[in-house]
Length: 44
Image (cartoon, rainbow, N blue to C red):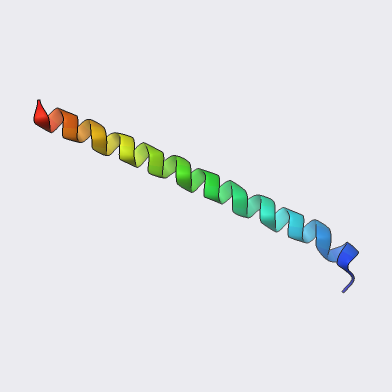
């Protein structure tokens, strides 16, 4: 296959990969925040 045909497909795959990474990082941030809140509640 020619590179010209693969370039748009590669760009779409990279965009989807980066979007999934952003969602994962955002989810981890929410989990850490929830854990911190639970620890604070248990201390009080």
